[in-house]
Length: 310
Image (cartoon, rainbow, N blue to C red; front, side, top):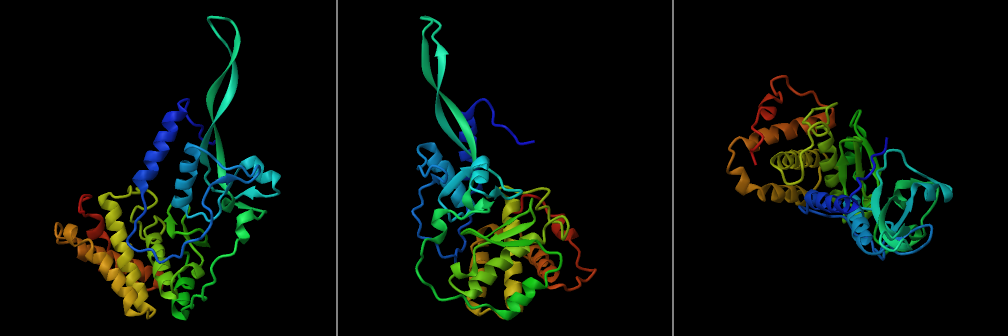
């Protein structure tokens, strides 16, 4: 059953904004080319631009999910377009003022008063069956990204791995869906950047409860928390191992090393963290590569670590 908003839409909107601010986006590295669209959200059915708080709500969701389309529509409007909202997609709350007839208790006269109401909308990229107007906008011509055969082999060889979808403008692993979403390779600065980013997200997927069980889908850590930092460290180290395994050039490996170096201050507070994180990263890379992990290398040391190591 779809969760309904509370009677206090003001609080619902405030909570949504606070939640998005808490999630943030990790700016350690971003080799993804950005789009050149207008960026102002509008309704696909009417063509009208959204106003007020809705601009911020939809802009934040666009930024969070990496949507390229500026167009939004309701579930019913998607059907009217001859399409449908894909299964598992989450809607975005927007609000509007509706004039409602009320009787003035003092004068008994009928008056119109503004009442806050809500809609749930979806981005056009969350739907199938139709093409939004901005899907065919021309962009700056860029040279094709070189595919790396060995990297492709590693990705294809990840048995029973997560679903991989080329979508949006930021890379992310979604534990609840066991799905990696990553922009099309042509949006990256180079093939090496694309594969290093993909390896990072695939490394996160090894923490799913059906694989190495680092608690990603059962005990998801909030952005900025110690456990979130630990998982990011594991994923970045694992991506470095995978990059090395397919011969990605030293500059990309140096980017990973530079990222790890940024944690130097917090790593000084836990002499065990680098070793245990590297061990977990090695198991992650081995899992993706299909290698047998030695029985002597268990996750006991990693899982037994205190929750406040960072």
